[in-house]
Image (cartoon, rainbow, N blue to C red; front, side, top):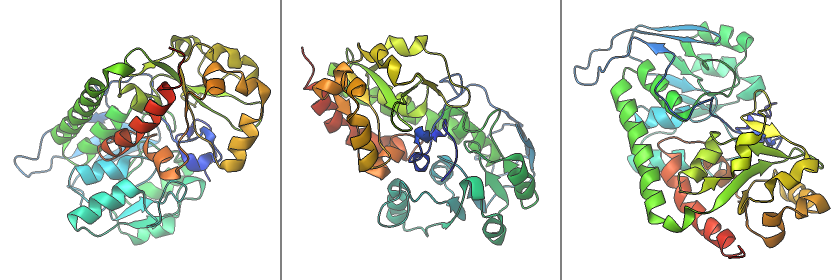
Length: 352
């Protein structure tokens, strides 16, 4: 399991550790827009088929990509899906046992590649114990880790294998738009990446239009790391953005909370649960049934109005918790349809 809260925020395993997210997966930097990127040398090479070298500066170094990558390895969350959407099947991806199904793969990746009749990529251990040897064996010509927790020590070893793209500033802090754009630039498919961003925006817009009844419903997305703890994901964190994409409104109280460094969330503590009194719905997840029972048994937690009346959206399936926590071309259509019945059930319990 990876040791990160905000990351928890980004990766379920974690939170299981996570709690979070505080464990699970997470994400977004300070903006929900992907107009800025750390990549230079952007050009549309798809039409000509000629790859123009690019330089991508990031927090851990500089990636010099001189030839069109064919053997790509991905680390962290969400990069494999974008690489696949851009037409390349990675030769290797970080494994996520917490969010995988019985196939051993994240289901949206398995379903997409099976439908294409493509071979599944090799999987290797990631997180705090990245299997450098396994990655080297795959002989990659590009390693993508823009939304990850790769350390400087790990990066130095990975860079010795192939050009490696890490995060722009801090671990696990990049907007989903910037992640897609950076990956597209590294692959020589910048314009195609922008098209993917537009397609995701359109998918959200269409989903919201189909559910006008969601527009006046407010929500907060919370998490725990154990008894007496309480964290609230901020408005631009990816799992929150996924819910916003359906047309629901983040409770304005979230904008008054102070960000806990490195987490895309605010750790407010259970003693401040009253701040969530005006949230129509509460979204959350638990690391396992025992964690859920322990947290829901707390009287202060039960006093949160949305919790007490059952207006809570708390999926239990690990793949869904993971898929609804990351925004990319494969997860968005996969997760939105699964969210609707859960949201409808929670809204039905509102006192309106």
